[in-house]
Image (cartoon, rainbow, N blue to C red):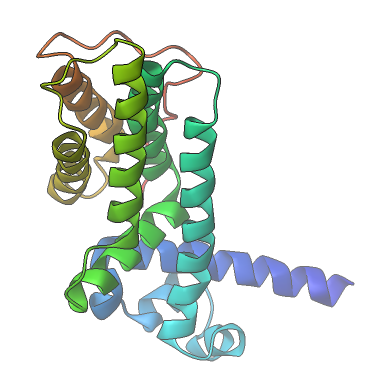
Length: 209
């Protein structure tokens, strides 16, 4: 049992170190020697847990994809009004990307892989679909007018999320949620300032990648 516990701790340390490396440098730029050094291990110890960089990346992208789907489902099926869900969608995504390094690495890796193969990332397709569904509901509730086009707004949130993410300097993710959510709210409400986040919505302080 002691040996198994030690192996699990080592596994988790390697995943945390790899998440920071992939979030900073992407898949192509990631270096396994740096991952091993960050985890205070030898490269041989790393290979005992993950036989290749591809398998190490997969250990992050798989959980990310499941967490992404759970997040979208929770927002869609929650008790809030459609407009509140549209706001909460940006808040939850921004908070998770800002504070969860493994989630951020998975997002980065999945997006990078899709671009490499010349296709739209699955996360982008899912996000646009969720926005379209919630906007249709908001229209039926009289919360949005016809000039808010669901497809255009989905693409706008997508552009905001990727744009803010890739233009945010390293270790300045503490402003990611503020920038994304403010811009999204103003787009939904014709430039009106966003209300302050409730305590349960506010993200945790930035964890340095």
